[in-house]
Image 1 (cartoon, rainbow, N blue to C red):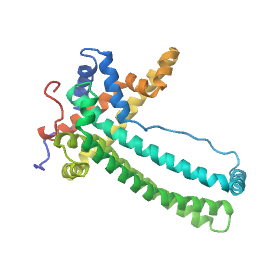
Image 2 (tube, helix red, strand yellow):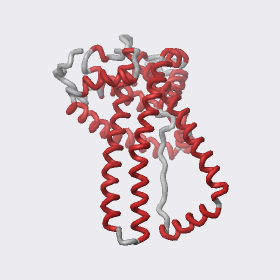
Image 3 (cartoon, rainbow, N blue to C red):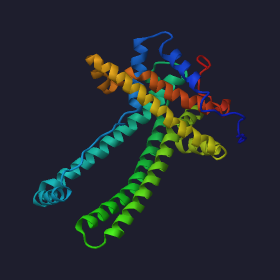
Image 4 (cartoon, helix red, strand yellow):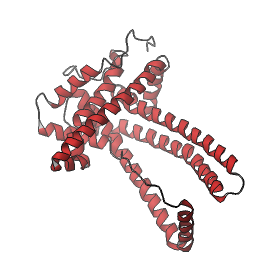
Length: 304
């Protein structure tokens, strides 16, 4: 492979063609069936992605003590319930990861070839998706081990601070250090996941190869274009902010039409409504990758 850096790699240039891809795929002509089919593939691709929230307890010491007493008094049923809960969470994680791995290739197929198909990419990229699934599981386990242990240590330090046993300074310093470690590991895992979905999956799509082989090929590009990919990640943050702003404005407008705002909250229907943004994000990363040479161009000549 030629490792020479291309003369021009831009994070701005793919924006215009990305918008044109959205127009071509979704609006020329406008077809409800096509939207719902591609929307299903996109929904499957992002299955399991969500956000949650929480609140601050009014009295940490009191709440901690009450929780401790409750657990001690109900260990007979809490332990089996906790085990069942953990098993269910793991099972759902595996199912969602497997389905979304299939969905990533299905959605990529729809965008790259301008086709609204489910059965063809589901069958064609079965082995690719299985390889991606295994890679994501290993990455998830590494992340759990690398972040879980520091989190447990942090909980221990917090318990020491709450107990006030004279080790507060050490506990605070330890918590800060562990927090920095967790932050560093989290960023690393995020970048691995981001590069996998944005670039390694398209390489697998083109080469009909495994995820590890796709990563080896991508690393040859990354090794000589580190600054360019740093800029790519920074610009992805800008795109994410812009998309969030557009989504928020759309949701606010939708609130004026109650039925629209409620539809957006339904996972699959919401994905269909937001499909232009999802197609743009997928097309943008593909167009950026295509700047590194024709061997990385995933788009069919029909919509190139």
